[in-house]
Image (cartoon, rainbow, N blue to C red; front, side, top):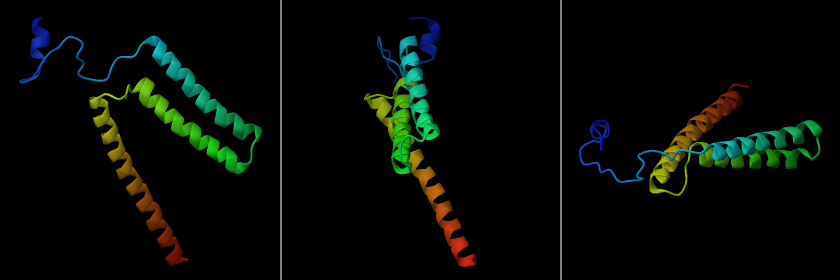
Length: 120
């Protein structure tokens, strides 16, 4: 072990072969797959809206479905969040941040709606 790897380890940390401290590194193939899926999941709703192939309700469901799948693609292929225990903590942190954002946005919309109702 060289001096730089020893200095970068804190007290009580252990070094094992193959043990990574952060998210795994992706290969060119995994990044290309994620990119192609992202482009496809962006293009499909765009084509549905531009062509007007489906009804308004079905188009809206397709857009939201593609958005959810695209979020999962980004989490897996670009952020490398999988079923490991460290990734679960990242997921919990992101869910907590999402909850806070929903509370802020939802509270803002609720306040603005009631202000509009009471002032009009």
